[in-house]
Image (cartoon, rainbow, N blue to C red; front, side, top):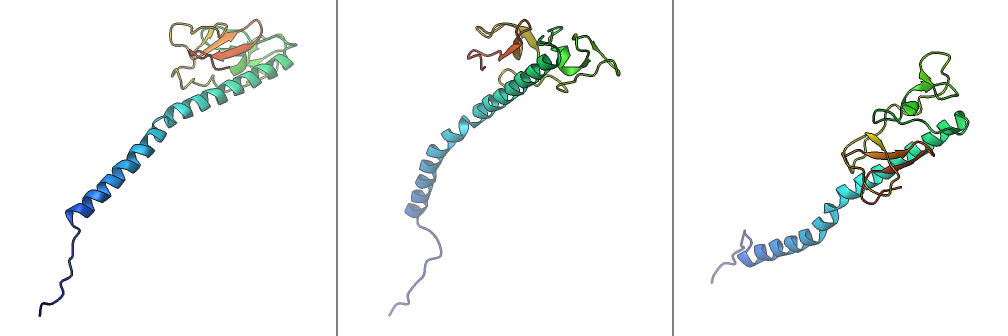
Length: 147
């Protein structure tokens, strides 16, 4: 009689079935992660925008309702110490601020520059944020104008 033989390897069919199952799983899982970078950038942009809005409101509360001025692509009143009249400077005579260390980058654009705008349309030049110094409103400088 013949002795019973035990095989020590997989057959080609078994290997192909495993490969097909892995391919189907990859095809369903990978697209879900493909948009995660964009989602993270949008979330970070919204968080940065919310933080900027709250600091602008705090500035306005300290400066008799006046919004910080826009100059040279930044909002200096947020990143420096100021007097109640909005004058930027240093020392004990400037008790307010800084409200932020620096203007954060808008990850959707890759830039932290602030330009004058209304949020209605994208301002050319790749700036990260649009700001209206007359009322203190700020927007993301993107096509959807995240507000």
